[in-house]
Image 1 (cartoon, chains in turn yellow, orange):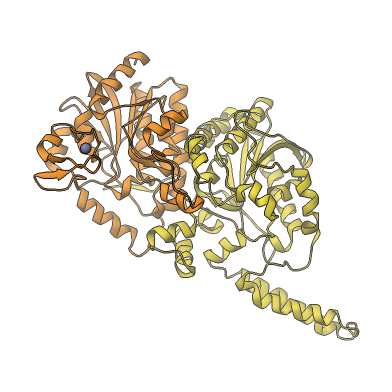
Image 2 (image 1 turned 180 degrees about the vertical axis):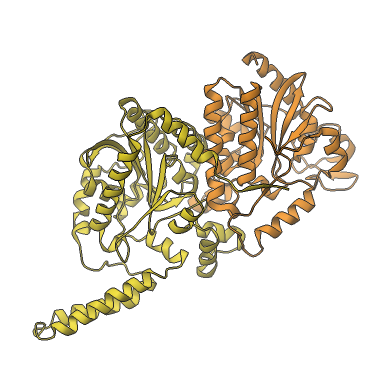
Length: 340
Length: 283
Ligand SMILES: [Zn+2]
């Protein structure tokens, strides 16, 4: 598998990150907004644009209020599509935006260097941290190299290896979760996908250093949880987190995956940030820019940076032993049981 | 453990139907592996293992417990725990209806049964999963019962034996199910730190969230012959890679070759294997 260095990706992605106009991929429910944007663009392109400034301003206002209205009224399935938006910022984008002096650390020292999970040291605000995040890739070539963000066992083992370094140096760990799920393949099974994830769950639960996890896009099942046993688990506003993807759930419980059943499954799975917060499964929802992170990546980056700095300030006040105890209790109490 | 209703094994045996037999009814049946026509009674006398080819038929939890422990020694704990259906989940049917139907059919409350018992005179904490209860899926109750079993083993310093049989996490409890993976693994980390002995026994099938949490965390991991064991199910893998899967893929013997389990053990030897391991660990 061809290795793509993270820094190369950043350069390629600079264009995407700096782009402030409307995104190029338009989700079905965003169509009316796109239509207004087209009108605005064509008016702005006219020679007499100055004379019709008022008209343009009023169109912009209606565009903004329409966007607000649409995004205030999204279904769970809409949110899944936003979480998968091709221009939504991904781990390397956030690292680029919020992290100084980033030093990627490669490889699990056993098998290889899984590009689906990116690990490295960096500075966020006043903190030196270890960052662990899923990497989906953006160009076709990158996406293939990154297996579309679906990690193999060596990815989880790399993450653990680097987390142990962080523990040794007393560095807080920040994990950015964004995966459809751990890779279901022959080699992944041969190399012990289940064992790799299980060991991460066990070891993260007793890691003597602060851990903050943020679901930035897709939180697909065990593949997400494999880097998600943390002191705090937070979600970006339009991320999803669930035991299975809506399509997987629809295929099994509704017997087929199509637009209607995917949408019903997404609803039933309570996978949105808001639902997960209400169910006590995550600690906080980080608000995204109006219209989602893909419309304004730098604003999303600022929000995430602020959030990480605030949370690390809290977490680093505890001694590591206390954190481990609290982390244990946090997961120990999750469950809805009654006695007959 | 406060709300635990305790019943002796004999009560369980007398008062509770053992649920849907994985072996079809009738005096005679055909072994799905070698095709031999088997007299049901001879299969039962052979621990549901085909006398011709040693094919291991699936076992409901209660039968498994009876085969594993010294007669009359099992005392169930936490049998009354039930799912609360926290998401009021509905697909084509409601989860509440599914639970009710499964409970009626199996005569049990959940997909794992825990308790204390003796194996060749050695006291153990035993947790046995039941594939006949919603595919042995792990929701809040399975996670909670496994953790309570770990805690009981910790506080009494007893060996912990978990026999897994599961299709994975229970979708109908979504995030609650997922978090049981973290919860059980965290409990096992603590048990490990205090020097506890945990023997994980994998039976057909053990896949998904159960494999990717407590099932793969045994100090010693045993498996019955030819059990399907994996993270992703073979159908999902096939759909992903669009190729035929290699022969014996994800079976016990394959996993042992790949280095992910210690021993493949015939069901009829399981009691002596476990008791020997307990002795080696000095528990
Ligand atoms: Zn046979």
